[in-house]
View (cartoon, rainbow, N blue to C red):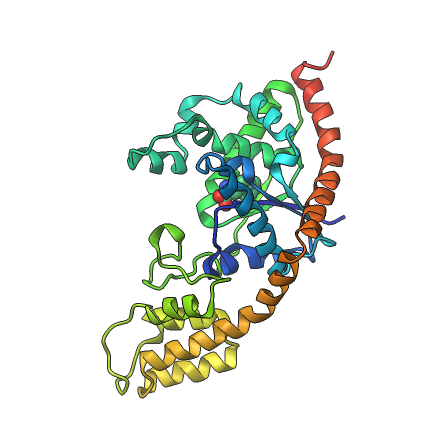
Amino acid sequence: MKKKLLSGIQPSGTIHIGNYFGAIKQFVDLQESYDGMVFIADLHAITTIHDKDILSQNILNVALDYLACGLDPKKICLFKQSDIPEVAELARYFNCITTMPFLERATAYKDAHMKAKEINVGLFDYPVLMAADILIQDADVVPVGSDQKQHVEYARDIALKFNNIYGETFKLPEPLILKEVAIVPGIDGRKMSKSYGNTIPLFGTDEEIKKAVMKIVTDSKSPDEPKDPETCNIFALHKLFLKENDLKVLRDQYLKGGLGYKESKEMLLKEVLDFITPMREKRKEYANDLDKVRAILKEGAEKAKIQVTQKMNIIRNNVGVKI
Ligand code: TRP
């Protein structure tokens, strides 16, 4: 029996190569060896998106993005969170055994609080809904970026507490963080993130991608000078695209001198464009057949429901609402 893997993706607009190498590629690679489920976390997105058109557009876009990146609906169950409203019911049961101080320790909440942002109850409660997503499916492993590790720990803690109060009901999920790809540097050298505005878009136009690559921050060494590949932001990105041998050749050119940063950027641009061209074409095909995408999500939800119906029966029984 394959282990069960589950992860959620935020429908939060344009994806970038940091998303791809940090998360999407993991799902695509892992779909071979796990019994996988990936859902579009629209009930999470509404903590911040309150525009109907933007939300529904984002949901479709993220489905297109992931299908284009190689998620295969035959291998992995892809669905939309809100098609399984039972997670909201489960979150309610969890809410009633979860304390405010416990949630106040969540880093996402603390960040928002520090920035003095208006915090709605949905955002405060985010880790609880996320625990429900994971635990309702009896997931064994949850692949997430390192920033989400704490949320998986919340899911474990909530499962333990529920099991203590109501009897053994949930298994404890493990986070799965692939180390080498966990942090992709952005064009300014900090972690690539939309909130830093330092991204290279995955499905941008050639022009947009070129603009981002040419803006990668470097020191001011002239083309002739030897350069340190390990501190170069361009080189860090080459590592994602080049094979071992080509990378070695490039490293030697850096150390020897003679290769300018501009030239290195032009090489990188070509690597990025070659890499994404097939994915772009696939995305276009799906975008021309949105009914097919809707059908994939519907079928995914029906599959996900089988486990959910059984599990909710047990949960309702253990809580005592089933009479
Ligand atoms: N919080 C995750 C993110 O922001 C998305 C998410 C929601 C998720 N529910 C989940 C991830 C359950 C893994 C499992 O990326």
